[in-house]
Image (cartoon, rainbow, N blue to C red):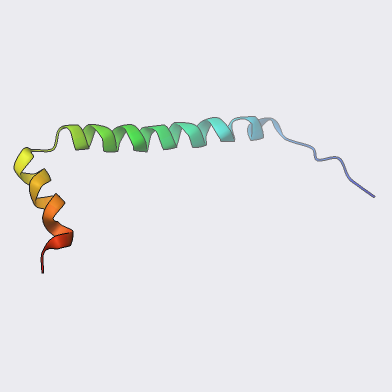
Length: 51
């Protein structure tokens, strides 16, 4: 009635790839935010309030 799920060897790598991709995106956005110029950051913070 129930079949055993047979994982292939490449299925073990998928979580590591997903974590690596997520960490890469997070680190990229963090570095970009840290290197952002002050005037650009002020402009971007006021965008939702502009008419």
